[in-house]
Length: 396
Image (tube, rainbow, N blue to C red):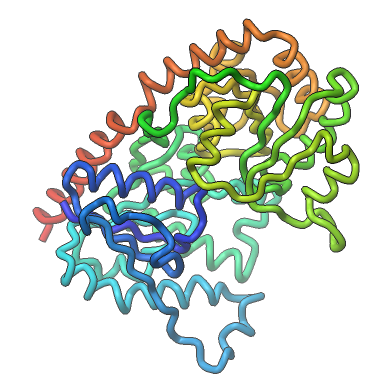
């Protein structure tokens, strides 16, 4: 099978881009050919070991007449329009030249919306989700006229017109049905998969008091809640060190979140690691005492999956996909979102109970192996692709 992954950005090593990276390698190992189509990232990833089965195609944006269109961005989603029209221009040729059988596009990027009306092959929209959508929906900004409403309408058509829609969790699929008013659309749940050959425990002992946060340092990921909880934890456990891996974001106009945390809690307790490679991140999963995922909302929970697969106990917010994959006090610990006191209490409890941490991590590892192993979910994905291709061809 020749598979095309259509993704807005392919230069970072987290979230949706990490998903495409690992899925591409897994598909190539099974003998399939993969074409990654993106605005960024050509040559940034190491695929040399896959005998030319994986190709990255970089798209150039069109339709920017002396920057005039960009002036309309506050009232019209110009960037979405330009990207969509550029994809519509180049994708038909790529599909033909590379004999692509199916395209998978991300939901938040609305990657295939302009290509769908002229598609030569079936299109799968993968509901990875953007946590901010939920906040915009609850605050009634998702459909605010004019710019947000136009984006909402494009997104709705993008999902409705797709030949196949898959979602990372039941929670996020339910939210999408409600927010974009598409209750009639079938959504197949195929959770985020973990490659257990890469993400696995180590026999080396774990640090006694190290807590890992992996993700963007921003409010949606719960960094503000964690920042409030850290002093409470340090009061009970002064030798605890917090490690932060991910893109740093502004705390204020003068400083970033990592700078604020170091300034308020001290360099002896706060370590900012920056953006890590997969190999480096796995090492921290394997050696950390706890992985904390305090997100305000999380559609799919990639970090939790990865940490669990590496045998690291997870404390997470009781939201979205996190609440689906973690059984509270059985395969991890769940606390209410945006509740610093509850978060601190949970971290302190886990730090004090070594045997319980070991029990949680063992049960979590068993759960990942049974439900979220890459090989299992890869086969489900291929079956869904094959059915979509057959249906599309029979409809001609």
